[in-house]
Length: 170
Image 1: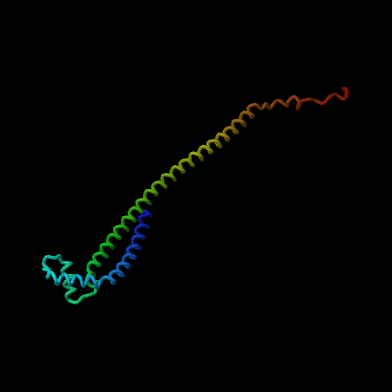
Image 2 (image 1 turned 30 degrees about the vertical axis):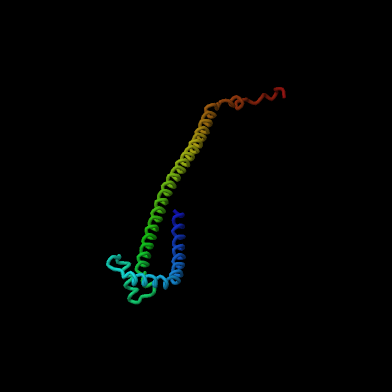
């Protein structure tokens, strides 16, 4: 997804660089190109009706004195620019759609992972509480057992011993 965005950005920069280079080359060859076209058109006496509309407009503009190639090919440039812009928009939409889809998948995976962790944590807490509860139950059972073994009358004999007679051996 990011790779596509980087490629798109790189292509845009590349298109700008290419456009700049083409404009430079256009200025260099514009004069010779126009002279050749005019010479051939005059020599051949072309029947303009056999040409497509774009070429006819090009030759007509040249005959009317438009010597700049930028004037002559401006329509093609505009068409090309519109096409590049449309393709760029499509690419951006596609990248955004892929990005959104990846985010959706990541969100689902993250939720699933969180649910698993919460379930595991809940099980661990429940197990710990059960151990604590068993410990409390164990303590209560121990106390009950000790209480049941208690014999209250055990010290009774010692408590009821009478004092010895004063003449008893001391």
